[in-house]
Length: 542
Image (cartoon, rainbow, N blue to C red):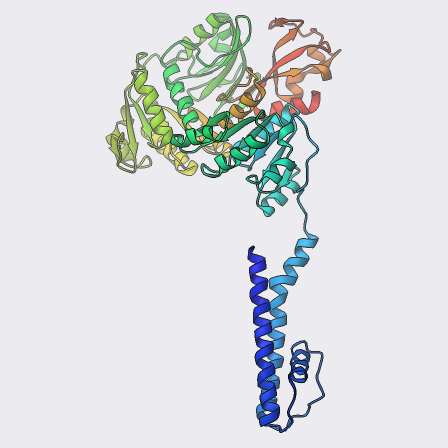
């Protein structure tokens, strides 16, 4: 029984009890005090008239003070009961009738994505789907949250995703994928229902505790993702790739043509030089498409823009060209065979990082506020004395895997003050914290929501051009909206902030084209840029 029904039952029980009590007392008073006996129906009529304030009159006036006080008591009780009903029942009922009603019936979609719950990961996924014009519906059990999303123009379905009717209304049998991201215990329940209704639809669940992944698989999930494990792997790979000239996370666009992000390390050949002075094109043959300067993406970077240890270059070229450029971004003062790495925070992310670094032969020191297996030093990442004792002042890299973004930002400030030359790699739970972390002094930041959302999009779409953990997106688009225009005439970079990396035509991939190159209807464009620029490109040309 719902809360509102229980409340109504209690209220009606109270009303009937009071009316019965007053009726019996009134019968006794009229006989014993007024010497005017009344039957039960007659007494009930007077009590109801008094309670509802419609008047009485048949028995007035009363001769005794006791009966007059009884009538005053009945009137006060009746007024109280009526006014109590206003906030409890009448006002909510009126508000419900006047408020927005979120959709709860069957959606009119096919080949769509059903997203159960709307977390930051789901929000990132919807942004990717919007860019690629793929329909979706978000299933939300909470009415207020459903109204909020509906009023924000998010395609939403109000209902409990654990029930068969709600998933049928979402038409999961016609969907290309179902994403379940509620909690570790509820996700398998939804998966069981979804698998029963649509066994051929791709089913993806999230799990906070990796040890529970097997239960999700038993429930029918095709893919079970642990976001914290994934971001731990991504953070660790930034360290392992930082000690080698191999470009491990390059995205292959065509035959022997790749795009990659290369963080510039403190003390490298490129540090404290302008883009023009670096001579990257002349020395390596690679093209600098864009660059992140302290969290702000610029494409293309100005020749006068100065490169420092917080610059991340977005470059394109052949594999050997990128590897040559990677050598220039590595620190000349850091040992390339490894180095002391301090890991701040030893939860799921921190332990994953330590495991990967250990496998790669890189020594590390773990610091956490709680003593547990695997923690080398118990201390606070925002306390300089604790950081000195943990060896941060001599470390080559500090990885911040803390569970709170505010704490991570403050820890970044403290670590940067203590060791201006150390490389700081940070995890952020929310994308809004990324820019603040760069401003605080982080060299590289990965947002949990971004990595998870792109991972979902890549899994659902089977698209191998989407980068999961880079600061920009690389996506393939059809050139329909640009057909007949030249590269110079469209001026895509100025209009959207995106850069055309490659053009595919009839199975051939063009990576070297002049401003007069004319787009054809069947062309596919490989476009790179930050999220907001990619969204602008999709809106303008798709």
